[in-house]
Length: 255
Image 1 (cartoon, rainbow, N blue to C red):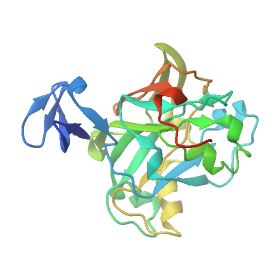
Image 2: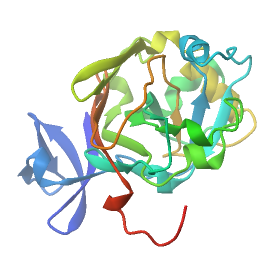
Image 3: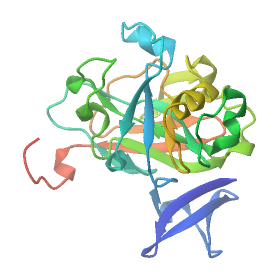
């Protein structure tokens, strides 16, 4: 089942996909364009993987890591399907990152990889933009690169774990203004999903609603104000995002 969180008629609703439309929990059927899409999971602790695809590490002229490169993301970064992402006027290189997101379904501590899928609720899509101008180095992404407001669209759907036969063999694609610019497969992850759950839960407790952004393959290119960026993952969904400039936001101070 595909699940979502949307705002409609002044209220926030849980919803499911129904024959190409959205069915609210109260039974009403509405069209995609009638709602404001929210992140399908309210962000809690969010882990993100850097350089988790060897081809992406290579295109950045970095060696693939021997241990997961993990950093945390704040809830301020997340926006929903069809939302706007702000590109600061002073940056030269801001690129998308299409990523499979693993959503934890129940408390997990010291999980063995062979049991890892038992702790997953489902999967969604993220587009984790990075601003290379602010990068210290790829082994230590700093706060300004990965925790900027509006820079991580996520959704539209949370797809139940049981509806995805093999999450480690899904095609990822990104389109910029309708042109295919990125394509890869989750089978090329350096650290697969069971390994990541075993690794993270070995030293900290994972909770229901925690998320793991599993990295992006090669093909990340620069984007510009006005671009429509679509990130999609086979069987999971198609996430649409629009890049806007500073003028679309009320400025409260210098950045």
